[in-house]
Image (tube, rainbow, N blue to C red; front, top):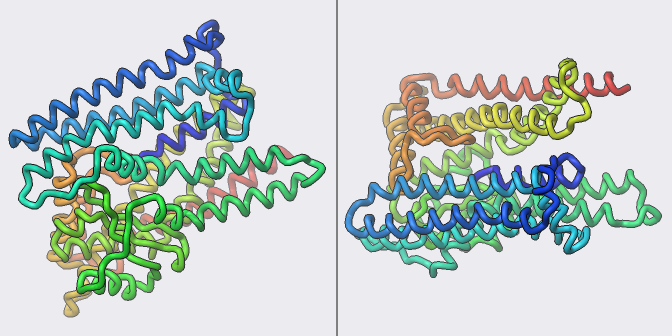
Length: 449
């Protein structure tokens, strides 16, 4: 999942607050604004569509290696579509153009602004569908594919809605709260209501996810029992293990929910069907590691600390125009891109190490990380990358590359199982988060006092 959809939401909020820029006459002509906002998206879609159809023919002829290039192009297309939308919002007054037609309706104008990008992201799933069909036709165990449109909806839900929907709900509630007459509610109660809404959205998202995705409880049996045993061993409570019907050949897993009563583990049907049981256990241990190490709340706290740190970093630089909020937004995005990405990759590395620690438990005679556990986790990551048509050296901003992760795992063999270097690194990250956040807040309070 990319975070660019969230950046688009942030861009809309920034434009709404007056932080955008104007490109002169171009921004003043509604037709030119619409053409510039939508035209590049159409071109990107056409290129991706043609590439996917061509690649599907090659895959059907036995050239499965062509899939990796097409997957890279589709990922690039998704990024370019969102970057174009962000540019239109911040530099072309796209939001103001839409409001000139609709008025400032609660959430309606923002949704229309995002529709070209969201529609393009959905259609990229439609474009990819022939490749999935070719893959299914050339494997010995074909995947029961959904329809073209159902498959695209599944991919759109996984890649976009899961991360975008909470933000959209919060934005909609913010606008609704701001629209309440001040005679009905004070500013203090507005803030309280906002915090309640945010908490409700995040706590209730697992139920939304269950309704949004095509999931069903994993059937009772030895595999389900062994996966629940992983949770029990590490005292991680889950409501249910859900089998995730993606309608394609994607191998993936995720854990959603902050509290046990509303926490689900999702595994795609293809992952369950194609991976050995030991690999599936490794995947489960990785997801449990995220929960056991409390990565989600710490990621949230790290974002807050980085935002405060960016504000403090701007203070002593006299050459920066303090009134240029767009420049401040740019600095903030750079700090988050570098800092949050680095932290997120270390958390992912710790989840990999947690899986290795779990797999090493089967050898009761040693307190060291076993070679078998390391090779199992490395094999799991490589198998998932290969079956997803991904390059092991492709860098992911939040997760790092598969090659980087496997290299980190290889160095764990023979180390004390309860004292791994990455655990020390993450402990320092958490300590720094607890120090930097309050310290930055204190500095800002002192400067504005």
